[in-house]
Length: 416
Image 1 (cartoon, rainbow, N blue to C red):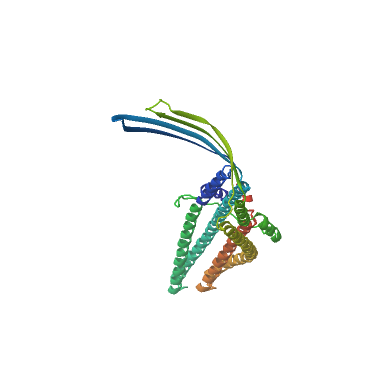
Image 2 (image 1 turned 90 degrees about the horizontal axis):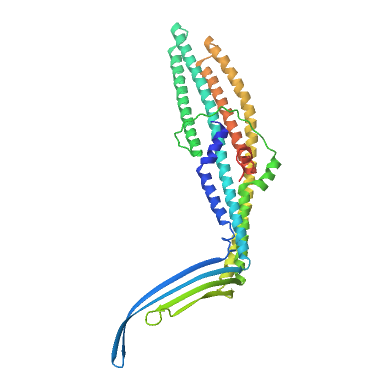
């Protein structure tokens, strides 16, 4: 499985992305003129009543008993259309657009987070596999050293303590391989989770040679201010708080609505004619109302909304400062990691050559077991530092691309 394959699987199956897509669809459904109150409301109702009454009537000493049955049917089709509400319907329409854009940004952030996690985890597995290869090479070296120690002991050129020490180091290297293999298995489980797959799905990854890009600092600062999803989201939050203030203020304006209905009524009584009355026909009118006093609640709500808007602006400034701080730190981390890669690559090459020389000297008895083990350990340490610096550089690079809002430009997924 290649990195591009892993990203595409994750974009399709990642749980956070699926939830974010559904939330976006909800916001899209809510972004309609009907939900903003711009369309009329039409209601239809009908009522059927049946009455059966036993009636006893006395007139001039004569008692009359009879059963009276009556039936009535009413129906109406009513239309109510708000013509003017202080322009609140247009404000609601704009708020709904903002909410849709905010969910769009939430989806983008979910995709960025998932993509970044997949990339870093994938590179980590690849580098840990390279480190596993180094452990296995060290294991072979320890195995050869053990064989040499045993041969020397047999011919009398060595001693038993030398064999025991070589055996201990051999077993230590065996344990290191087991721990490293377990670490890789756990990271593969994590990657499966990020891909939205069963944890036990078996897969292999392609061997990759990490490459790194160091963007221009001023350019990514500009991109942060114009493209960062989290910053854009907070700006939309400020806009919505300001719209809420405007929406509350519309309550001071009159409400004008157009009302119309078509009514039907039929009443029948068995004691008289089969159909006593029937009425039907349309009615048309206009209603207007305005709230003159509501206990100062509107003023209180407006003041609270203004304070909430101020808080949101403070949070926006806080987010800007935090993101700029993160950008500077990630940029410094990238510079450090790139410098470490150059240094540790040189160290690793020297340590590799040193091991080759040391093993020959050990065969000849020119160096001790401890000296050979120290040379061997220095190579492993150099390799570990080299691969760690590579992962640190890739992590910092991905963080910078998220902060600049350009990470999704590099994958086959259009930016939401």
